[in-house]
Image 1 (tube, rainbow, N blue to C red):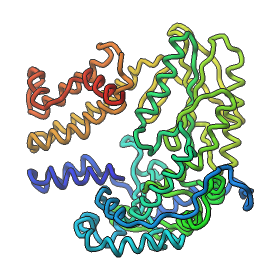
Image 2: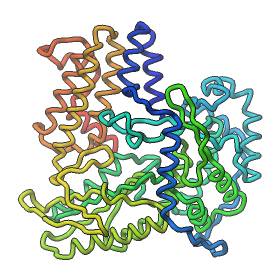
Image 3: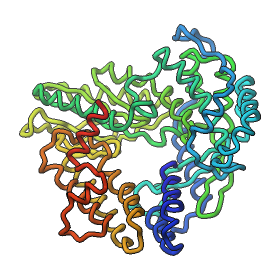
Image 4: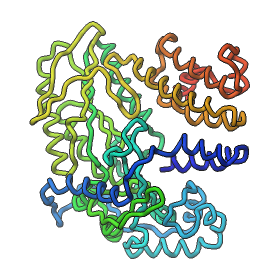
Length: 509
């Protein structure tokens, strides 16, 4: 949601000073709005609720133990009261405003010195009593089209994006800081989980896996990469199982009581084109609109790693996106059986944890030991058959079975070209500065996304990306296609694509 908020600020703030209202509306239309449809807010609310309920109802009631000895030698039974920390959290938070906020976030931050004592009292009362305020348990959901190319008239083509009150985020940030510190200090989090972890990203997750695949190929081994797909994973987390997992980790007392209160009696309303739906109750799931939800989901998934490793597979996760991979001798006859056994155990674990593994969308990529070698096999699991693909989209990057990334470069080039085409159409009405901001937001961001994966590729392979950057520089300065581009790049302080890739690698190193 922060992305769309930032985009709105870009159009309202930076561009708004130099553009007429009609043109500002055109850019908003270009960047934000979806094609018209007859869908209503209640349609979305019912659809999102039924989707989660349908998945959850297929699982039996979990059997959890109320009395057991924790597997962790250390315990976390209560939260420490806050003092000056509240001020730091409020001022360092991104000023996004939720429709449920009575005071705009930027105004609250401006008058923070006057309200800090009251907010500190509210937060400390909540932490001490183990109760999450009921006023903070409702979310405002905005449906977001998953891809611009999808049919906007179909409900299944939208994902729910939650907006939560800012003060509630402040309280959850305080809990997150103390809970995550306990988990890190006691090594309770999965080291192969990169989601929402400081110093980690989709790029580091992809680099870890890709490097392992390349090293295997250098050792004349073939590899298998399996990309698991879960249906509404965050929304179907079972609270009873999650609380049991937290107890096993040593979380007890008012700390566990607070987390139980935080998860229970939640509701949401959908906001869609000026109307708000009826309130819908949530019996499962962890909220995705705050830092605490992803942390709880990571805790929920920690035991999956041991199931995967039992079969000799390596893995890496980013939130609910899980990559399994293992390398083998090209003539190994046991590969199919190993994959089937591993996926079967993973499917059983998912059922036990009330998560739905979508086998029809689970992808299999086979990286051969050398380009001339081919593996022909398929995996049968229940009524589903998984066959190897030539390419697979992995955390926004198109990976191919030769690790050449030519398909990813082609896809990136196409999307950038479309963005430049739209910007070029309105270029006569834009200032140079506004054009540069649009190009950096819609084109350079795509060129730079996970570009460390392209390190070491031949110059001819990344040339299409350089041509896009050249075209972008010409659009900024409104120059013809024949204009010499080097002076333009210097004026913009843009490194060429090859240098940007090396710069990213150096930053990561």
